[in-house]
Length: 232
Image 1 (spheres, one colour):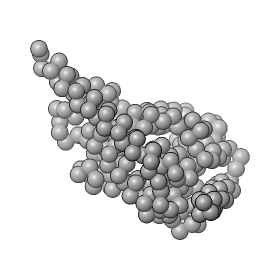
Image 2 (image 1 turned 45 degrees about the horizontal axis):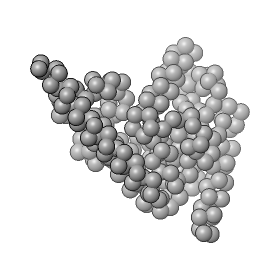
Image 3 (image 1 turned 120 degrees about the vertical axis):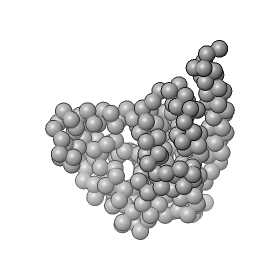
Image 4 (image 1 turned 135 degrees about the horizontal axis):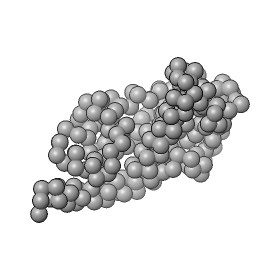
């Protein structure tokens, strides 16, 4: 048996163990509850979801988590934030990822990353009063207020071009790559589809809606949701 075949078989066995661990964690999440108001936001690039999330955190006095999650995940995984960022944006194939992590122990394994991410999300949910941007929050925190921000593609192109100083063609390419990366991430780690409307409590199209109005809609729904829970 050549070295490559041996590495593939060992990596495959480890992947199967990782898969079983992931399934076990998903079962745990089904019975997990948030302890206070938490808004978990999923957004299309260019939809204004990130800006609205910051607005919501400021208006509600909630903690805001986006890039801040990277440092906390890195601490849980006992690695540095740069490795977490590279892991999140990696486009390696599953076999290539297995081989690379097997040959270089410095690389973050998928299961290590996922377990660390879930622990961080659980800890944030336990404290409550938080706005979480992306990273599978709506897939994991099923008792949070889960919001999806969308907008027509050409509207997103125009906004992205303006914000980043890109040509329309460059903006289109960035959006297509970003949409693909989001689908790949959620499918691989959580088995979720970002455009599955049944995953969310609220889907907001910002094509003809101001971000201020979008924030008002989320706050109204949040108050309804938590008043209902407090009344039970």
